[in-house]
Image 1 (cartoon, rainbow, N blue to C red):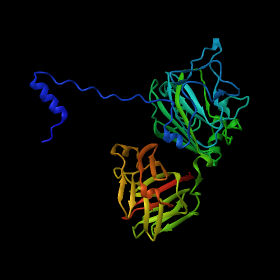
Image 2 (image 1 turned 135 degrees about the vertical axis):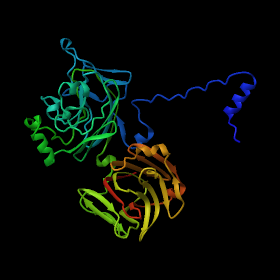
Image 3 (image 1 turned 120 degrees about the vertical axis):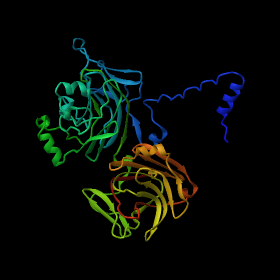
Image 4 (image 1 turned 120 degrees about the horizontal axis):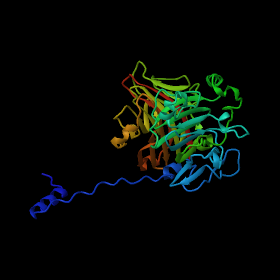
Length: 430
């Protein structure tokens, strides 16, 4: 029988006629806000708000930070409730830097009846900021819904153009997590981990949406190819923190591995199906239901790869690196892509040592089966790190990996019934 230290202590106290002391409650460390991890810095993230100063921000159309309407308190950038008689409120903020393609993350907390917004690719002129720049809405949904506002005005949506099928806004007074991704004109709005809307600037669908909205009379709306990030001051108290951005231009995240039209730059191995559909790369089990691979013609040693995948059926697949293929026999290492419970993000060595590392079980919750997922694989020397939907899955150091080079390859597992979609495959050599 195994006797624990706690049990021995309890028996000793009982023998002395005493009561066992209560165990101290587990303390959960308070997260540090407005900071970046080493991994985030290595991946190109930068803070837009340091939690202490207004550095990096100025008034819309101005050279300096507004004298009224905004404050920095307790690590938060605050839009102070306006007082018209004191001439406060009403000045919007923009970053001192301009951005084209990016992944923007931020947290916000609105007071009851709070109203604000985040703008992308801002054009600065004598007109209001919202005339020209698409807006991610930030507001107290419950208050405005009760006042008759419709879904295209709720938090996280494409303001006054497109609403969302779901509402995941946390009530006023609670922190919400916002995200805006702009990549080659394609824009995604996220709220608390859920993607609410997606649109493509300049597309026929976009033009039709704008023509049917109040922005039809503003010819410059959404036309800028780059510009500052903006935050609206609507005269109500709204607080922001943890504002960070990662540029998605070629210099920051490398080059695209998939052109959205054909398999140029790739080589098919085996008889399984690899094809392009609706601008997405698709792998699907063929009649033979064997292993299949799609490998890059170029070899890569040190790199960071980002991609998105959607497991439409089964989903047993993977992303190989520093690999070589003869027929359908592959030598190399795989960042696993699989259904729930099968170690997505872990590293497997084919025809060798097998599993080198598997993610902790609780990290499997990062996988969204049947939805789009973002995977990042960073390989530098003998170190491999993977992330799934921004959750670090593994961090491995392995001497054998450090000695290799080779292609990047996508896998379709044997057994049949598998269909996986891929998009936004980009690699940055390090």
